[in-house]
Image (tube, rainbow, N blue to C red; front, top):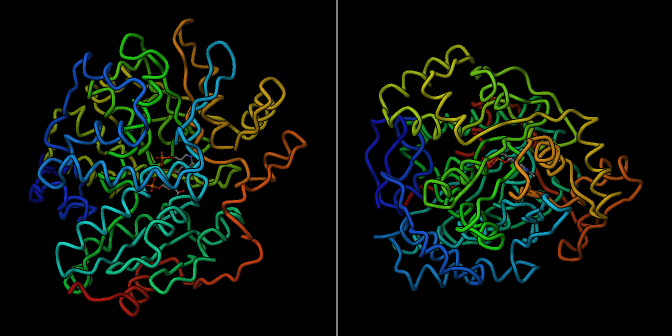
Length: 467
Ligand SMILES: Cc1ncc(COP(=O)(O)O)c(C=O)c1O
Ligand SMILES: N[C@@H](CCOP(=O)(O)O)C(=O)O
């Protein structure tokens, strides 16, 4: 399998190359040259497989040429061995139609662990084949940071620099990053910045020749194809449990950077019968506006009780636009250059119609999030976090036909956001013992200006050269 850039002019790479490259050199995102497709029979034959085995089946076509099937299974077994639930991503039934897919049983309590535990092992595998050091530069609105740090802390040949918007992540989220004191981990709190600012700094570094000549810059955000690939698996896991491929399933996905829901789109391209993908946003609703009205314009970021979704530039939307626009990299490069210059973009008719065939969207405000948290607790006895609440709000208002299960992706453990959950339900969720004495540990991070020069200087001073 080889990988091409959404902007058409970067060289095609194999899976190993795309994983280590992160972002394409033309500023685009890597996607497989074509979507592999499984037959109904093949999908049906996976029912009942343990998660790690299913993961190896689903991901096999994407890693061809870079990993043998045996090695892939060894890596998935190791990655998912660290999850606190044997099913890895268990399903919980809420009522006759609504389900939750719990994606927070990994070490850092959010769905990011599902891909990042695996990606950490991929980095080790591929870096072990050369004498190269990798300098990971990532942006986080709270969850990617801790999951990535957990996945690479203490590993040889990797330094990680994680940028978060100062004061805009929860205390639990911050401490999960800043209390990891391994020497290869560097947390940067960006002053007066949003996640979008942090993400823009990261992307700029990939195209800064002064930096890329000296350092092999790598990505752990969902701009890295390997992240999305690993997230495709749990759509198959949930679908199979609910009767796929013989029955369609709808998914509601709390969305920010459009990575998780794009993984659902990939599952559909690969043959999983998906009735609908519901894109759920908080009031930072660029994706809802884009899907409902064709208006992809940035707007300012409003802090909410679901801080990890406080995003107004959704990187992976580019991957969808590429596919829906007939995979014309030149045309998309122009469209994206327009967006980067003006912070606004109108979707073409083809993009709007293509998207509406599978996607719908909804936006939850603060009251809707709180009332959904309350509903889940009072009617189903479940404590859910504010991100999951956006998804469940959208799921319950989507009007999906009776008989079709609707699965909301429960993307974070409620104890990551105890204040919001307690306000809505009167119950304060407790941290699972696997995160240990988080509030007793020493924190270490650098506060720096939220601008490119300051971040680049910090990275240049602390990173190991490429070789
Ligand atoms: C808890 C949580 N839910 C949902 C999202 C949105 O996921 P995505 O960015 O893949 O759309 C994020 C982060 O982005 C998150 O951390
Ligand atoms: N919600 C994320 C930000 C988006 O990051 P990505 O790694 O999924 O692209 C976070 O919590 O950091």
